[in-house]
Length: 316
Image (cartoon, rainbow, N blue to C red):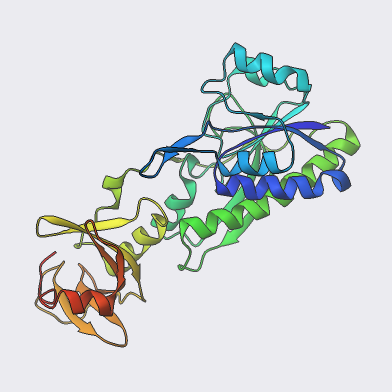
């Protein structure tokens, strides 16, 4: 079975690597790759290819980087004669004309316990809401977003220390193996299973912006810790220190007890050499260990305090 793989970020490259390693033993072939066009990065606006493109070219695979999935794109891909589309974090919606090129249709890797958290940011949503579990789901591609039948699903327990970046890579590794198993079965039987319709209440996630990372100190320390983990590595969390923004990059364990203190939420309460900088929250205190002033490099809490002796007592 020949497949076209569609994906863009680092996590999608992790899944692609697993599929390339397993294609011979599982009886399928990654015949080509569809990914986003190179994007400008850095001060010099250099064009940087996606991690998926880099990996594909290292393996001498045909690479397609269209701006739109239009007729010109279809004409380029059609000669590959792929039977199945496999997608993970590609970033575009596949229309009926595009899906019609694949006689076995398409499958999509989605890192959530579908139908919970459909949409583009399921991993941050699970962390932000402090869920006790999530899942890695392989579903059939449908014309409506993330509504296809479930082909495989592996549940993951969450312990409250995960970041989006690390959890997404873990999901990519699990998903790559789930997809490889499905493709092996499909190669042996000649078609994919029908799968199970999604059941339960659906919820949806949307695009995350920098504004979502602004800290509300009236929330509990555990909620702010979850916000940091959900938005790591991007977009991070921040607050205002006077007229300048201040990024909170790393924290230690959060106290969610009501620590008797008359200070308002957002007050920088104290500095502890062994622990960090403590900031009052709506409930508990947040122990901050790495911070970054606007326009400056990130600093550990000791160096930060050495350069900002008046920081203790500030109202953020």
